Length: 220
Image (cartoon, rainbow, N blue to C red; front, side):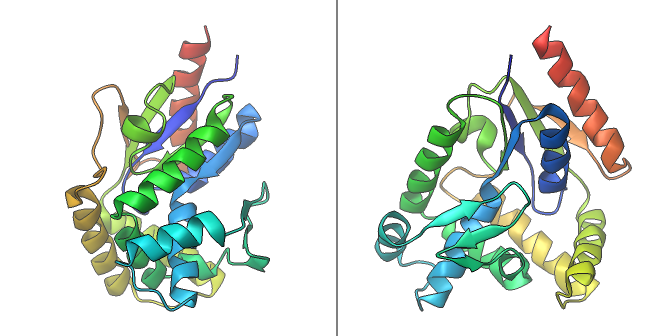
């Protein structure tokens, strides 16, 4: 039986990395909703739109965006590989800004629910447990200290050739945490039925193993 796994948590907690490994182990599909919002922000920026122009951005999503999220991790939008372009600090904040818009969230949540309707998906983001997949069999709230997340993000950026200092990244993470947890539409928070995992002092393998145990229990 293929379940749906919902993973919430703040920026930089390792949700995408963990989800990729889980998807490979379980032969599930990883749906990175954060990358979807980043893609919207990037495309809107390229079109010269401001992140508060809700009607124009929703129209762009519905009429102009051709978004493909491939199994190898590449993200193609309107024929352009934007995989690295959406991972900058600028796009992180822009994605947080655009995700506050109710119309944008409505459009993307509907898309995400349709994709995951058959089961066998690992979906990560900010409001997956409560809004996108409220009936998911396994729900996780994955977090880590802001300092630990900043160190991880710096290492990832350096590998990808993305500029930015530790101090800049830490400040960006703190700002995004506050913005994501205080927004009016679907704020970041742990649901009562989600299992909290603090990965600050855990390896990636340890986090994956912990979630695999929860999956195994649900599959019994």
